[in-house]
Image (tube, rainbow, N blue to C red; front, side):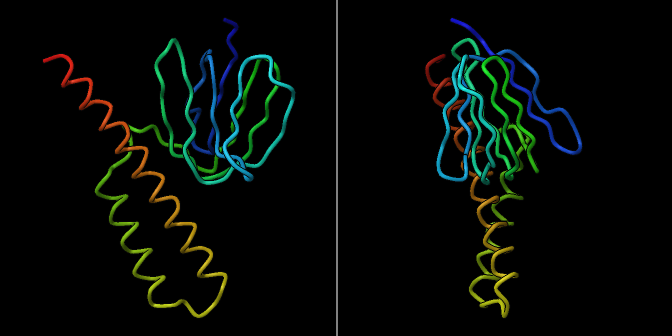
Length: 146
């Protein structure tokens, strides 16, 4: 099966640069699946989970939006933020979610502030989902080894 180069980049670092079999990214209008030899595409990305497969193993990232350029043999993701599942501090993400929910309950006075808080809430929820999926996968694998 053909492969494609995946590069995930943030302002701070090159997060991933490797040959992969498949990429799934949170597009503005829904999840976008990319296989090698995909038609060229440039799209904005939403806050969400980016996944890719390499040699049968799936890896996940929480991304905070950005842009993705797709060429037949190369996918470049310019992400506002990108964290591997194992990099996410689940306790901090849970605290961030709780803070955002509390602020939303207090009804911020302006809509710009409400939008910012809702975005923070979505980021925290994605981070938790990615971290918990990774933890669940590790637990199920540990159970099979016993």
